[in-house]
View 1: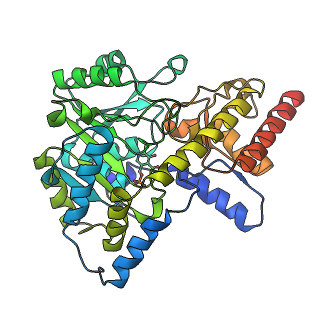
View 2: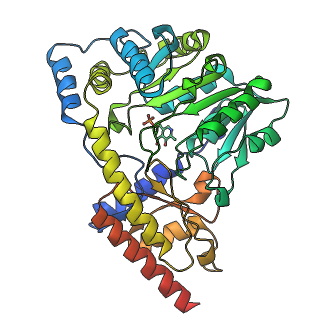
View 3: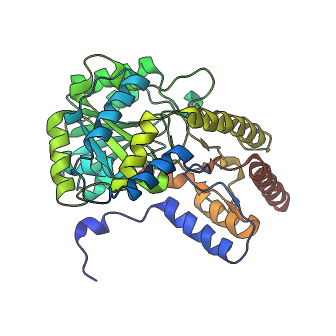
Length: 394
Ligand code: PLP
């Protein structure tokens, strides 16, 4: 079939492909140890569910304003101000169909063929394809595992060319869990501002940071607003992945351009999901704290378990809910790369992991610990068993 060139520039998300293969095995009755999903295993908190049910019962099932219902836009600005110390107003805020859609639409608004977008690696799988869809060029900026994969201002500086239009920073990071330290974030921002480059900060995992770290936004720094774009999501923070509610905070002309695109595409995010989101942002946050405590326990278990496997090294993730170990020492003639390894692990051990190749970082695999401690233990056992027997056979 003759499809438009822009469709041929992108591929289906590799994480969706892994999940689909795992689903096929599960349907055949396989007992999977599943480190695949990039979503919380917790249910959406009940008070949020109730708010959406109430909205449904009250007939709030019609089109809403394109950029979202006024009370939700207001709540997003107030919540962001309370959580991070920012100062956005309603015209600088748009509600989107998930954080992914916010980022996709920003790219559609800003990027043209010939533009370059800096994407720190390891990166979230969707960024390069979304950039390519617009005709612009993704430029990976490699971070250093010995520095915990944290992005540094000098790495950004070195990658900038006259064509650079935008830098995207995802902190905490999917897949590495790296958190950019606040003072480094400001340096990165200053590099961008000096060169008139947009800094898009994807705050999707903002509330899952461990130890004594606190959720952080660059928008808390006075004066940054004209050069930064905040993409946020309720998916992970409030265990609302299927609700598809995200948002964008940015200078008014950009929000107006996004609104124009939404008005000609999705019209508005789902009405009742917006009422659920309103409750999430104005109601109690104790379920978020409870989820964080559980992720923290799981993080400790998975990181220590991975490090105990001979030949595996693992940077301690500062945030999000992924471990990203190096398995390079276990690659061989039979299993030459992480993509082959992830297929073999699925076939032979019914163990689901995502190859680091998908995240622009060969020699690594991503394990989501949004799963119970029991399943983490089981998965670690299978991984160790596989590596030990493969090493013995070599
Ligand atoms: N950004 C990152 C880094 C992600 O990992 C994801 C989802 O996995 C998203 C954005 C988008 O999330 P959603 O579209 O569900 O809000």
